[in-house]
Length: 107
Image 1: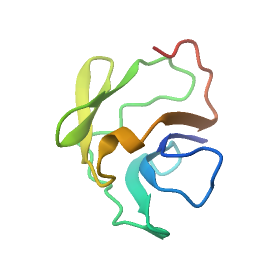
Image 2 (image 1 turned 180 degrees about the vertical axis):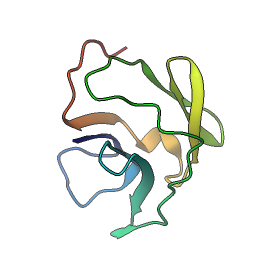
Image 3 (image 1 turned 120 degrees about the vertical axis):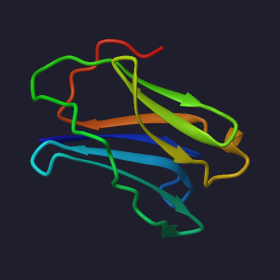
């Protein structure tokens, strides 16, 4: 059971840069962050203070794009952050959600 949140530069071109790939894995109780730049994955970031997800429970996730990083909030509390690797960040234009997820709102 897992889902992913991806911030893409060009959804029509699979080889283009990915500003953030956020993978939530319930089996491993992990939250992995990475980016794809110039045809290569960067260094994975896995450190989290706790695993806040429970299968079947609803949650509110916010991705706040700040000057240096993307801050990831869950139900209003900071979970982790990810320093921008795609520069300039305005190249990132699309959101992709995949996996075991029931989406109720995107704003």
